[in-house]
Image (tube, rainbow, N blue to C red; front, side):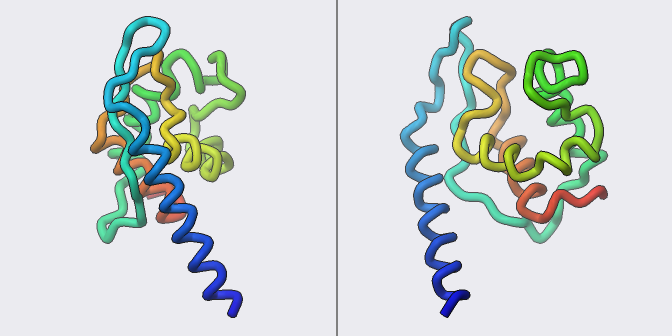
Length: 128
């Protein structure tokens, strides 16, 4: 019975994420007139898990760490190391999934980057 309730809750969550992301325009404007990639409406752990070192760390470096999520950045927590990212994997996933990060006036995250990052997080954020 609990497994069925959990499955229903998870399905409802994915539906809410899909609605939130689909209502986000594919090119909104931030304070500097920049644009944002459209968000993915669903994500899951892919069969071929993205590599933290080869794929995820470079995505984080270019879209999150520079200027904001570094030890000297303006954001609330750094993402300079795997340990820091792993400790914040839940909030990172939720913010990327609901189209809040990166912000509209920040670096642009491509669809492929967003899919890779959310997929890696869904796989438990392995240090691979």
